[in-house]
Each structure stands twice: as C-alpha cells, then as structure tokens.
Length: 522
Ligand code: AHR
Image (cartoon, rainbow, N blue to C red; front, side, top):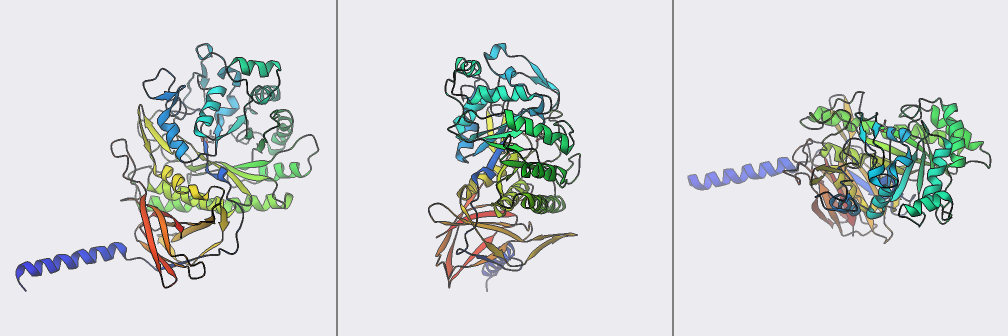
C-alpha cells in the first residue's frame, strides 16, 4: 500500500473510531408505551409562567413603554410577545411572589403619569413605577393568548382591598368599580381564570402559622369573588414549602370540613432546584459534578409530590382539588455583576434537562397536578427569554417548552423504561427518563431525555403492536452541559430535526449525551 493510501486508510479508521466513540451507547435501553391504557389529561396549565415585579422580569423584559424605540404594542415588547405566543403560554402568574403581598392594586391603575412611585423592598429596594399595572397585565396576557393567574395580597392587604380588585376586574355591572374600569379603558369585564390567595404565607407572605393562614384563606376565599359568571375562576390556596407538610394538612383538612361559605379549587407547592440556600451553583462554567448534583436535586420533585399528594388523597380521594406547583425551577448563583436582588442567571443545557425532568414528573401525576408555573418567564431565575435592551434570546428552557407543545392537553400513556443507570460518584440517576401521550388528533408522542452527559444512549422501542413505521421530531443537544445561548451566539443550543425508521417491529433512537428528544410515532 502506498504511503498516501496508508495515510488515507489510517484517517478513515480514525474517523470511524471517532464516530463509533460518539455513537457508542452505554447499555441499550428499552421503552414500552402502553397505548391501550390511556391515563389522565396532561393539563396544558402545567406549562404556565410566572412574572413577578422583580429585577428586569417585567420592566424591560415585558414592558418598555409606548414611547420606547424597542418595537412594542401599547408598551409591551413585540419580540417577547411573539416568542411567548409560539409556546402557547396557558397562564401567567402575576404580580408575585413576595411582591404580591406588598402590592396595592390601586397604585397601578389610571393615567400612568399620575401613578405613584413606590418601593420594591423584596427585590433590591428599587423604585416600583407602577406603570405596568392591572390593565397593562391584562393587555399582555391577551396579546400572548394566556389566562390571567392573579395573586392577591393577603400578607399586608385587607380582604376589602382584594374584594375591590376582583370587583373592578370582573363585574359586568355599572357599579362604581365597574364604571371606574370602563373609564380606565375597559368596559368589558376581564376574565380571571386563576386566583392565588396569598403567596408563601409561611415565609415572605406573612410568616403565618398554618391555622392563622387557614382563617385568612376562608375570609379571602369568601370575599374575593369572581363577578364574571360567564367564566369560572379557580382559587388556589397557599400550600407547602418543599418538604414541609403542615400547610398541606391544614388546608386540606379545612377544605374537607368547609361550610357553604367558602371554597377553593387548588393548593400550591413551591420547590426550587437549589440544593442549599443561599443559591451557589454557577449557571455557566461548571462540570459534570454540578450537572449531576442539580439533576439529582430536581428529581426530588417526584418524592415531594408523592408526599403531598398522599395527604391530599386522604382528604380528597376524588381529586377535586388540584395541585398547582406555581413556583419551580433552578435557582442558581446570580450572574456576576448583575444588580443585587435581581435574580439574573444564565440558562444552559442543564436547565433544559431540569425543565424536561419536571415536566415529566408533573405529567406522571396528571390526575392531580393540573397547573405549574416555572420561575420566572423573562430575565429572572430559570427564564424562557433573556433580553438586553433591544436584543432578545431564547434559552434552552424555552426550547423545551416549545418542543413539548404536543403534550398540552394530551392524554398520558403509561411508559416503562428498562433499568439502566447513569452514575457519577455517589449520584445514581436513571439513564433515560420518558413520557408518552396521545394528542387530540390521535397522534402518539414520546419525549425522552438521556440524562447521561458522557455517553449517547441507544433506545429501542417495540412498535410491532402499534405498527409505527417511524419517529419524527426534534432533539435538543449541546456541545457541553454548560453550553448557553448568548446575545452574540443565540443558537448554540437549539433543537434539530430528528428521525428514525422502524425495522423488524422495532424503532431504534440514538440519543446524544444530556439530550431531550420529542418525536411523534407515525
Ligand atoms: O421567585 C422568586 C421568589 O421565590 C418569589 O417571590 C417567592 O414566592 C419565592 O420565595
């Protein structure tokens, strides 16, 4: 063989070895979808968003004002609206968070130039200009096609203040408050789909004992009425803080023994992927240990839900009360140099894996978990969108929300995944995490994450009974687990087309390391 040919053969062998090394999967994993045993509907509201008056979440992230050079519609930025419309945001929780329990709605109505400047003591002590108030929020949710999930002020407000806000928003009658709303530009009553009765009443929402909160809950649930009889409103009580079960028990027992005079339709759970406070995990520039630790931590959502849902089942076996996980996501060390209290953080492929893991957990409990709100929508914590003045980028977490659109209101199908592990030091995780569902058109969808950041995984799906011929969809991979999108390189982490053909009654999917793949089975 000539030297030239030898070199070429060597190069080819190396190339082949390289490809084999990339494709070499750990143990192959088998997935079975039981298409004959459809489960509960995966409520689209588990894909809800949270927008608090915090840092650049609302101001700059959503609201730039009608005079801004950033293209906007009545002050709300068009690029952000278009991006959120594309992921069919089902609801937006507003105005907080801790902010909600210090928010006085009257400061945010009427001519904007006459609204008072107040303070935001929770989040950097900055001036709250109140230019984004009730009408601006309702305009925003209408522009993106979402429902309004309003949090009323139970901590420092009064039942009368909350009742007035609801009357102002929802009455079709020409009462003084109804007329005031019309004078402020909206004669038609608004629709409030969800109402949070306080926020973290065990913490920033008033440090209330469970019993004290329950008495506040009864009062507010009675008087913060929905006057829009055309539309139902779900009232969500404050529920547990992570593992603590006292609130779950107190609220559910009170509900079980309730009188005709008050009611609720849901209870909330807050759980952040943080490991310990204050948040110290870096959002960028981390390695496999930090990846594995946070993915392991986020998977605690499953145990938490099991604990709280078991308590709910005792008091409410018919599952009338929804569990709404209205704050969840990764809470990392703030971006160096960002203002104190603004909770700004980058968003990496690890965040995408975290998002998919939580969506899978919520879907598996679809019979009770009928709402969830990732914290938070723009520029804060595990955001969908980051903005820098006129620039905007979509995060890896955004891409997950877009890829999972087919699961909104689809019917859960049971999935079994053969045992296979990913290990890093003491941490043991399943190698593969999957859910499946059937959409309204009868199409079957599979979402599958390969949690192993070091190895591709070969997944085999027995499709002989269902006679699926191919899988088609998208996969979200990244050069590294800490890869992020930046304003200069906004598509480093972006979904790519994915497909596989069945052969001999089997579909083989080759999943890249630390990837998320969503396919329809056709
Ligand atoms: O999302 C940030 C904060 O976290 C919220 O204001 C509060 O409810 C929670 O503690």
